[in-house]
Length: 218
Image (cartoon, rainbow, N blue to C red; front, side, top):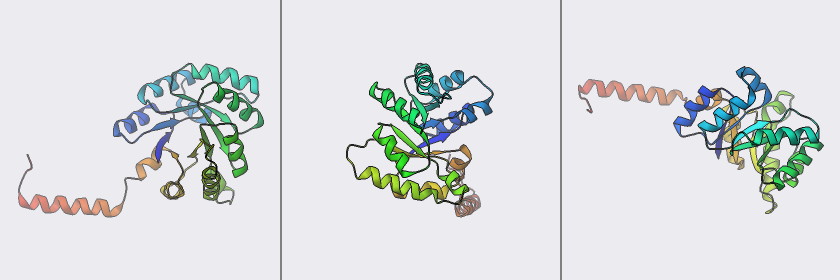
């Protein structure tokens, strides 16, 4: 499974990239707004940090506007993925962009039917939102299971399932067991993956025993 980080904070992206665990980045208008910086400037800096896919989202809601904004964003760097909403206009723009060699991430997917439409439009990635479904009393992971199963039924589908709105490690593990291709996680969730009380306890024990020997490795 590929790990993307869902943030526009350049310092966090750089630290994760240096760890060797980062495969790509996803952003959205809300995350860019939090950075307080111009979108093109932020996207360019992120693309310079990681060679992996960097999703940059359009803000237009009509087809012509999406096409213009997508062309503008695509000129920032070669690894930019244009992020489009799962609407009729968005899927139309997706089909056109993909036919012209542009990578597209179709976002705000909340049903398997929507995911199937995105695959039909040739999306590079589909972003089902699990946490937001959980928030309204639905099981977000059911959407991941259904989408992965449907995509596996058809060899012609090349769209990758990019699990979004991940709130905790359990979402990630469930998605990985289901065979999702990518998970995009907030930095806080990625950092939580390292943590386990038995790891901390074991390390403390090892270091205490080593100190008693009075030895030094160097």
